[in-house]
Length: 262
Image (cartoon, rainbow, N blue to C red; front, top):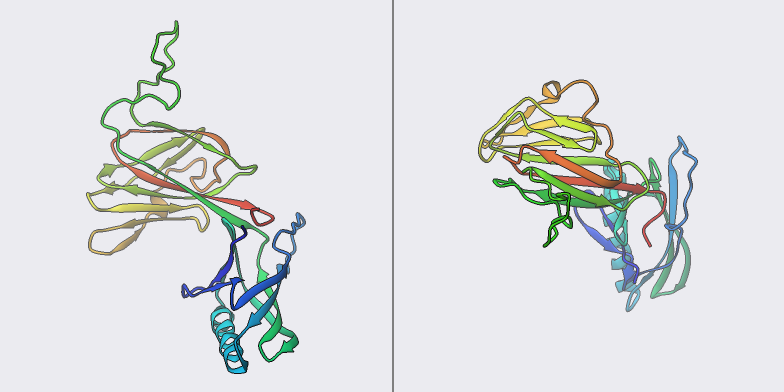
């Protein structure tokens, strides 16, 4: 069953497949691979219902408040379809027909800077005080070769996607100069994180920030390891992850695609 809703920048949600707002037609499953500097438009034909004229008027006002908030503020909300979302905001709301005093057919046009439906996948990697075997490679009987990885701070993650991905990483203290190797990519920042402090690396906006216990935020952009950029997108497929095992971190991948997930 398809799920579809719009969440504005204030966290207000408008369900597009639940009474009184029912989508009759939409092009969110259409894909384009040619970029357009003018942005992209996605259209939703929405029937707005009400028990009577007053009720349908109240529902139209709700539609305006939720969608119009981002347009007025110049911010982007998120159009969710199943497990993906498109950063966008309303561009136009055209009242196509008044079918009766209880149904109004409305054409909604959403504008997006790029046609990238985002699917979010996250994993948590905990401190490893002891060496552990890679999942699926520790057999209960002996081979001539040892398939068990005896090092601590090792993990694998199979990412089922066709392209490379932006990421956000949260590293938790205490730790000194945390360094994480993902396949051939080194993610390293020269910083001391005390207990209850953490650091966030975000490849989408090229930021590295440290969050102290007292609420202070420090910019660590110039404390990152130089050479190959830590902001480079991570590949899909099998990710082999190595670190000291002395600290934990969360890794979130933003998988982008040209059409909403079916």
